[in-house]
Length: 166
Ligand SMILES: [Cu+2]
Image (cartoon, rainbow, N blue to C red; front, side):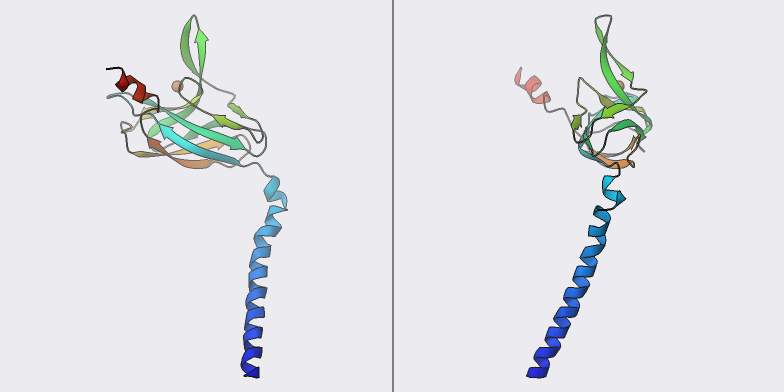
């Protein structure tokens, strides 16, 4: 009985030792230079369904950068190119234009790309964006490594209001 108990204790301490060693590895990384490196978290990505025959489509996402950064562009298998666009008033009309310098992402601040404002423009769609589909978007930043998100193709949330008007 005594020997069995002792063996069990040894096995336990070995297991505990392994565990703490495994736990140490990522912990050591988080206090190292990796933790201070620029990282951007992307959430809530979605795309508006593209009308029949449209060659371009708009996508939206919320970005939060750990350190000051800029969204500079990206790519997607769904289109020839992906640009970062802004909406601006020009001669009394809302027009969109590429943000050639990129979209600033202040550290720790959630920056939402949303309809009527900044957006991702998919240009040269390889196929229409159909509601219910998922589009992979790879976003590029000035400092942070690129992030790939899966954007759901769906109607804007406001669309429900249009149906109610009938
Ligand atoms: Cu646009």
